[in-house]
Structures are given as C-alpha cells and as structure tokens.
Length: 80
Image (cartoon, rainbow, N blue to C red):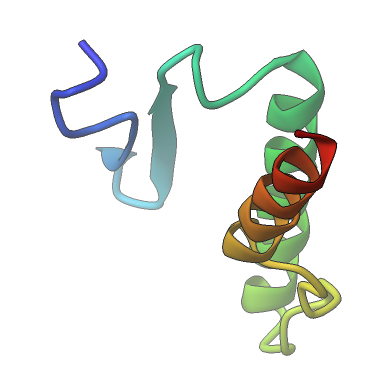
C-alpha cells in the first residue's frame, strides 16, 4: 500500500568475501522503465567513481521535485 513506508528500499548483500549484490525494490508508482534505466546508469557511474576515488561525475540537480510541484500548482491555478 502507498501508505506503508518503503516505496524505495535498498539492501547490500554480501555473497562472498569480495562480492556483493545491491538489491533495490521500487514501488511501480514511483518509477517507470525510463527512470529505472536512469537510476541504473547513475548508480553505475557513482560506483565506478567511488572505486577510483573520484568525486561524483553526475551534474548537480538544477530543479528539485518541490520546484516542479510548485510550478504545476501555479499552472493549475492560472488555468481556472
């Protein structure tokens, strides 16, 4: 149910001394095929940078969801 916590859950499982599996569970309401592809690609880039001791290669986020939600509320208010 959406009221339950855990729309996104992640767990790192150790399967051998130097082998791990990252398990990510997403509720279908918060992700689609495109966004899951973006998530996987960005996790891969972050992991590779971390292994090499580099900073995050990802660009800073220009807009937060709260900004998008405010913009949507504004559009709805002017459409009435």
